[in-house]
Image (cartoon, rainbow, N blue to C red):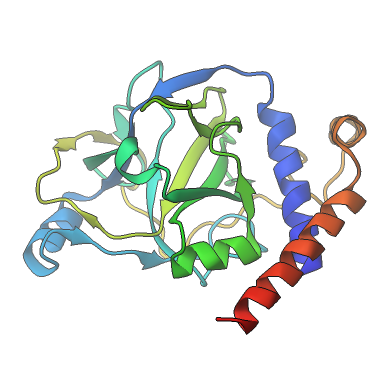
Length: 258
């Protein structure tokens, strides 16, 4: 458990180093692209309810949610200030207002930072949004890093408002795994262009192993300098391990008294 938390904290530091210092876009919705047939099946056979699906093995191969946590993937990153006009995941899009899912009863977690083998080398930050007190939330508390809802660079709320902001950094897409079901019966559906095959790859695509930006175990000169600078500014990994040990013990005590 401690080794997993150590690795995840180092991965978050990699993401922070790559994304720090960039502005944030004001965002209001999560968006999910799938082929038109996907939404047809949801309406015909599932009473218009999108149900969480088990996370595949895409991204970092050590990701603790792979094959263990179910959810629905959404995008939140804008393109030139607006929703992207195309998607690699399908030609049909549904949107969900952030105020419906990211409220006082939801917790936000960091889960992954990776890139896929491609010429563009876009990096992805994976967040998990879970309903407080749910089974998924308990799992995330024990395996992921909770982010402050009002103070993180990836997706944050502004206090006492329905205003949300997400990182605007060329080369980073923020994706959100929402762990609850979503009823789409009265939600707007739109059509977009597709990029590439136009659907998800079964089983997922694992991260690029040799990338110095998002691999913890690959350390080039620039990566060494960035990580060392971050650790000097924010403390060493020993502190992280101590904090996660306390968290692990707390979760053990909670499970004993349930």
